[in-house]
Image 1 (cartoon, rainbow, N blue to C red):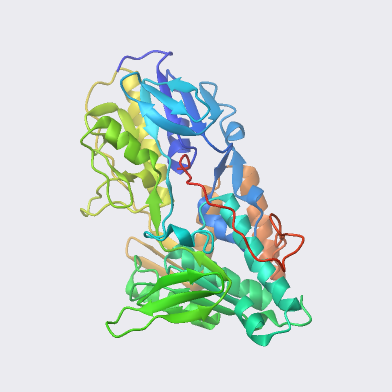
Image 2: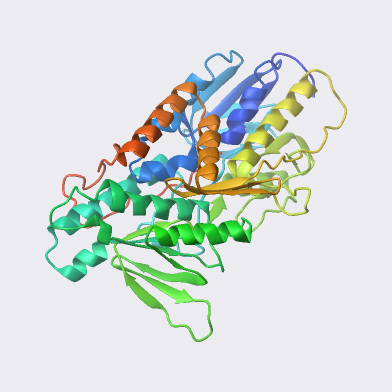
Length: 451
């Protein structure tokens, strides 16, 4: 790769991986173009707090141009990438424009998957975008409003039943937040109903919640969920989603599907990679993708025989030191972005030696179940309760993109802690003026350029 100020690096996706790669090239002799279909970087791990009214979208998002405004060699383009021409070395945008590159970095992330039941999407939204979060917030809060006006006890019970599908960190955090919303924030807000009567059900297909964590931490999380009044159904799978019920079946040969009357279902059961990954793998040729559509990458994050094409974050399959694929979490994406930025910068400065393989530094995992209830593990150290919760708060504040976001979130969390209030519980969007009308979801678009 020849050095020089005119070398063109195109980064597709302004998420954790793409943004860190761009930042790593701040002083490199190149022109960087960052393309995203949104004009902001989103801190996805806190989307569930937007969905339950604890934070506003602006608290966890920051304009990409603002983040990179001091990086003079970087240009931000608002656009949706639809394909690649690796021979001509260009990326195609939906509006017909093309953007040339000398080095391509693809970090377009993942969206939720329904495992072959895409018809469930309108009835059971996932949580990957700001629109997902505000739609879930609308549905949850509207359910309470409709229950307040509902004279039929059975219909009221159905409206006050919330089903979260998936017992990983997102599902556990979401279920805990809905419970606290109902039992603390809204406890004195209604006259005809008691929000504390709400029924929150968490459905998980494995034998325990937070299956990636140590068994003791999973047991703590399960106990904390029970203390919050959440029903946890383990070894169960959702086999049907309808407008007024969810069908759940236990993993036993003799099991019969049981219907749970509900009108609010939240999906946190799985992810699939952006469709751009398969397009790029096919363009390179001979590069496999796994079942969720992630691209198999080399130890230096390049793809196949193309040393000028990198794939990062949730879109990439890369093996860790233990021989297992790296998890699809923010720290992996951030470290890969830093690494690839360094590799490209070194090449542009004339370093022709093979780069050292990417090595993920696992700083640990954490998840919060509710106020002062969390689990964390790092290097064999396992924390639960208040200490884990404080660690979770600190790490999430640290990872927010801008100082302004950190101050806003810290202030909002302090306010929420002392008042048990959630100031951002606004019903917005479709049917906001008439919550008694049936729900109709905004069709979820694939997040093809979020990393």
